[in-house]
Image (cartoon, rainbow, N blue to C red):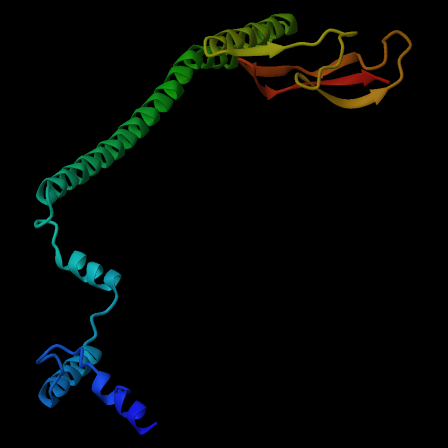
Length: 213
């Protein structure tokens, strides 16, 4: 029994040290590694986006490729915009002055057209009533009235007389009264109370009429 025990190998004898010679770290190596890890933990590198932002902000326009050309183009466009705005303001002022001139000239033209009519009124007022019959006076007034309408007709002015029985048109007529009538259909003009006057298609005063109901 004792001989069999002597033949069995001792576990301690079977242990083989697989660590390469010199691979086991020394105390100095362990201390150096701990110091390096501590330094890494203390460093704050920040996020990658933060670093990119700082780098982009530090780069000026002149340092970027084509930055100087872009800035020159921007300045040129700003100058063109300022010139365009100034030209537009000058155009508005010029057109405003021209419009005032046209309106003033229009008034002068109307006044010139009525000057002759005023002369006729003056001559009529100088007429001796004892040597003028009522018929002659009425004829003279009617002639002056027609002359005024003709003079203003050059500027698109016209007189509107509505015939009895004409259908009522709210765009051209103004109904001052409604009354029954045996000979006029409802909704049609019975009588013109005041004539209408228009400048082209714009009413100066619609014809004032009575309408059948």
